Length: 178
Image 1 (tube, helix red, strand yellow):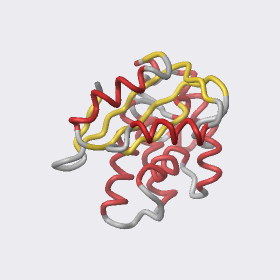
Image 2: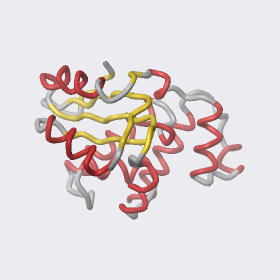
Image 3: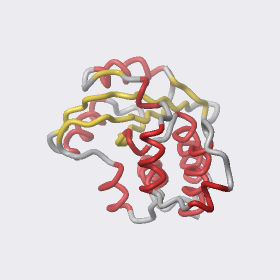
């Protein structure tokens, strides 16, 4: 189980699930959220997450922005905006949110740790647990570089080692949404 502390009471966890079958994204999420009323739950298309460090940075940004009152949307939607590096909510959801069909999903769960065991049990029932979805790889790097229009100047200013694409994307999210 991947966990970080957000404050004295709340933790964040991510659950990477492959082969999630979704008929209607809105109904799928409403059904899950109804089963898990004690936590914030968000689902992200896994191909838009560089690695676990990228996701932790985005979750922390969204948490602080909401806590400080600078976010214009609710916490779970702020995560979607930041992952997509987009200020238009509908466009962000259409890009990094769920779509009809089978897909790899990273679920973000935020709340008190005492609820996480049940949350994980329920999420394991919607597909196949896959740590691989949280790992950086060259195919994902190429996709994200193209998707985010990272030019050669940006890429040449750093060495693309493990974790550095995560840092660039997290920084882009801050700049885009401030």
